[in-house]
Image 1 (cartoon, helix red, strand yellow):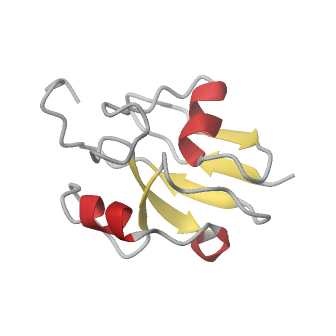
Image 2 (tube, rainbow, N blue to C red):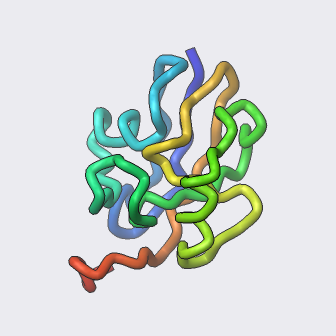
Image 3 (cartoon, rainbow, N blue to C red):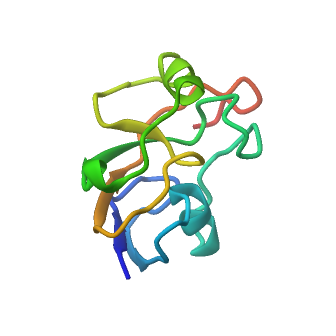
Length: 112
């Protein structure tokens, strides 16, 4: 069973966290199921960038991003080569280290 390590983020997981997840689970669902309340303004339908994360280790083990996700990622704050939308990134067999960016682009919430 792969493990996701979330690096510390002052709002969503100040101490960081390490969780075991089933392969085939999205990073967002894994986070939410374990009390890490990542933003997801579009309710997981790949039409915003509020669940943007950066995969620091294990990027290659995730499913491949489709064209819609790549188009949305172009709008994300702090985009990096290993950026994914956590609602679309499906955990494979390898462990992951995930960074939650400091900011999101969320028109409904200005407090992050």
